[in-house]
Length: 125
Image (cartoon, rainbow, N blue to C red; front, side, top):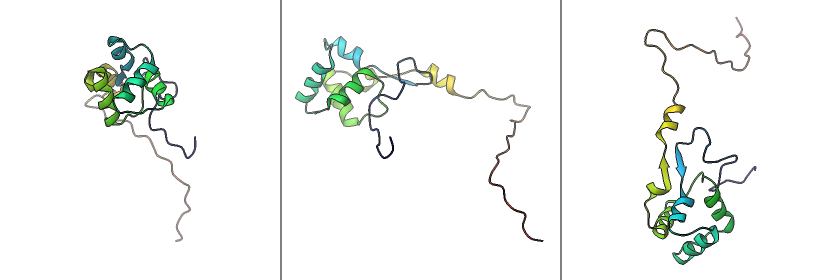
């Protein structure tokens, strides 16, 4: 996808069980709690609240974990669902801790890995 920027929508290969995700997107569950079972119904409610959203973007928000979301859009979604952003974005601190590298022992220095650069010629003598 050269030259095109992805502003929102699911990550490729994303899913709720993807290793390393520190935040879980909870839109479908919150919508279900309000009796909204289809993305088209959610899209219609968002349009009534002033947020015109394309079918593709709505599908990406409904099905996957968005990489990004505008704060204005998040505010309208929260107003429609009568919830807070923390209800839609659920922290998972265990996954954050799992991503941290293990600490080395205090007495032993960290291993040094050489960085190989370009081969350079020797300067003249």
